[in-house]
Image (cartoon, rainbow, N blue to C red):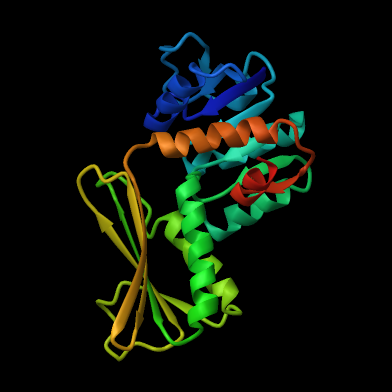
Length: 252
């Protein structure tokens, strides 16, 4: 039985994860970490990982980038694997996450959905087939409460495609300030915020007289929560290192 602590336990994702873990027999939640320490699910909730009543086997983080320093410090000091599922990190914080993986097991991805990771793989295959003949645009849509833009997932997609293209492309965010024709080496990223959209991502390949669009739409937060739980169980058995969804799928 894998003992899990959840950072952001009283947030929307934290509550979804808690409910899903309650339906499983391979893991259980032993504690939560949240600035709101209200206890609603039968386990203690503390403000800091350093206040945890017992050492978990793994921590799932769905909180806020500001919580990263304490989280990584605790996990490094105590040898606790961590699933980092929060978005909105700076480049410096991403580097910090990768550096921590030299000491403990870290699972890090901008999106925990199996479908999104398949979309990325299809996009990589597409750029290898299409080469530089098609313009690439990425459009992401999320609910009106999401603060970061573009989404971490959109950036993940762009970086995956750019890597396949030899990192020769640069990113253009929206186009309201760009008063010139589109360059061939651009990847456009566009954000839409509204209503209760859980998450939608489109990769648009626009060529001469034809357009190819790869799309993914999430209908609920459960797709991300399930991914993080599977990652936690997977990570609890691993040695130090940086892991992502491709490692989890390969281990299945």
